Length: 246
Length: 116
Ligand code: SF4
Ligand code: FES
Image (tube, rainbow over all chains, first blue to last red; front, side, top):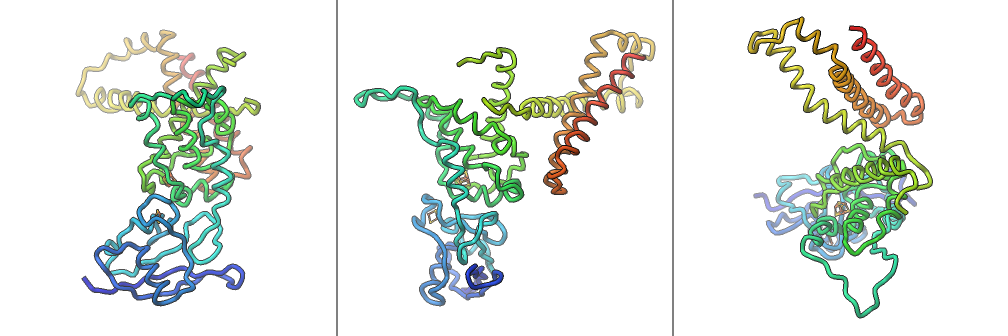
């Protein structure tokens, strides 16, 4: 294995540059290094002005998402040696406006996330000294969706979101499902009102890229299909019993 | 639900059409396009089939078999045009073309089935 590898990194400052460009850097190729290590090496030794986000270095915080050789990846969980002999191209996540170099503006996602009400909704709260019991089966029903770390790789991969920024997107729907499936939650119908609109689940055309790139195996595409089925059943119910089950 | 969307209905037709196309269509194709003409199986013969075809339940069944896959196509083609060709601004025209096409196809199928 050659002991150096070339990294091509997007450089862009919207305030000054007309368009993004690539800068190339040579970094050591170490077996245990991930792409994020290479970026940190560049920042520490070669060009301190390179800008990117990261925090946990262990696939938990969800802040280091970038495009590595065209694919949305968590750079702290993507080994450099997998791309040997290189070069490796590191770009910002697609489908988001770039703030600087590899840092994107995530506000759109945050607005959407809040819309899907990803928290436990109760009509009446239990008194503080009472617990909410949950069986292992009840936990299993939503556990997979609760693994989401809000890394937004699924948004970067979703062609529908790329074409129609109004689409609420994969993670917001998967997280709505995470609470819908939680036995302690009573907010399913509130969420349904928002997510069953055109920009909600019906925007999805089941491309499935979100599930492909998700580093946490959340399977947002599956969540959306499941939600479509639930929404359709609700629709049929409302048709048969027009006054509904209020 | 304040804004009632008709998407669930279209999606229901789309899903049902997918199931019919994936499960029932191949059986019919295998029987009537290969197995009977090539003599792998003894076909029921024209007379018997005609009697079967004239039974109302058979007609309804065949109508469903023809119609649902058309609505499956309509849904898929609508999104292919929306996103593939990126002409979502023409959505009204596209919707009429796709779902209208499937409806016309259904009517034609019904006319043919009930005129035999
Ligand atoms: S669903 Fe997966 S890809 Fe999308 S934000 Fe959550 S962890 Fe990231
Ligand atoms: S740095 Fe936290 S997920 Fe990569």
